[in-house]
Length: 593
Image 1 (cartoon, rainbow, N blue to C red):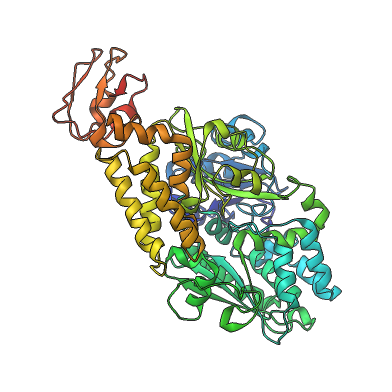
Image 2 (cartoon, one colour):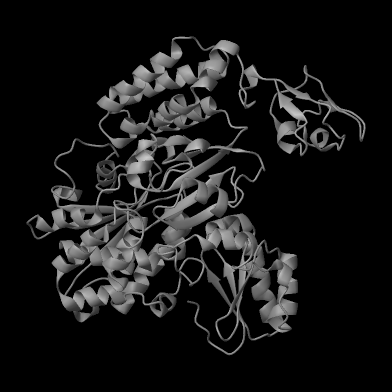
């Protein structure tokens, strides 16, 4: 936790990428300037992302006794008043404070079980002292002092922790395989090549609590016999990389990384490798090729990385969230972790809520919670106040789960049965203005562009599927297209070498499975019920119109006419069918034809 250095209040400003994008830098600069100019003697500190991205920038006022007041949606103007009234005057602005036991904040936080995110938005990620104050590196010290790597692996096996990067392979078993390999040199890798659209779990964790990942990797290194590690992080995450470099330097200075850690005879060195943004490098064999300086392309397995990985040596690869779970399991015992979740999916899971969601951001919920609870209770439903239609899980490799299946539990096997996958944790929420054919086209466009080209069916097959989907969205689909899509999908899944190709058809297959009628309407009726495929829809205003002028003011081509408090009309010849009028109308007066 943020440690107090005096008996006065401390101002803590959220300074993660998402906070800064919302305007936190201006708030932070104003706060520092005001405190210095007025000689308030107040400490101004930073923290990472609390997960409430929808209500940023955020500022916390920490009292001398540790009590916190969380201010949301803070502007520079508000910050000035907060300083004058709360920091100096001691009178909080109650209407700007998020109360954890009331309203939407209670719904958001009440169902969470924060393990990986426990320190995010609480500690200063750039100060190792803050991490040490919350028992940081105690788990590492305990395993090094006990000198029993087999006991560590046994704890991971019994905890039930499965890899949080997508496939869900048991972490303890992966470590066990690596430990069994002979030889003096082994490696550890942290896969932080987060490339799914709508996913930002790794970025937030690395920006907000980098030491938890470093400690988890060091414990894994001791357990498997590795003395060297790489964090493969995409270069598009400059703040995460900068804070990792700083955290590694601090840990080495304090003796938690490097040679002869804590004087207990264990060496562990961590390097950072910046990835160039290739989605395929999230696949472990392509990732290792990239670290080795080669083109990031997958290879045939076996041998598996635990047998012959980086530079031909036994290698253990886990993602950011998996590593961050490890210190907690060691400190609290495998029993505490295994007590959460379902029979085959233990612990908690971090999800990034994006898309048409009211409370977008990062949440960590216990396994076994339902999709409906996450989206409606934690996430608050759609931010558009329209009906939730589906959620895309697992990114381009996942699938679209319809609202009628929101009783599905967060469990690797149950989610897989829907045709989607748990993935790394991205959830893109869609309302009834989303065209499922267009969504399938969007994700296939992404995977087609990101294909490394090694496998013919992945390289060419995804392109053919994309051409068909594009044609359907343009109103030029044919009756045979649906069968052709399914046939191509089967061929791509069974002939592709890596997970990118094998799962690329999933968005198409799940939308065909649950929303086939929309494909048929596009092809047979030349209609897009969602109003997203411009060649297949028209927008008209009904007599439910109140003449509020909102649609006319927001129309990008000014094709809506009408006087105030009278029914408006759309000029169909000038209309570009963008749907903005429908999106802004509060009275459901704009309909799709």
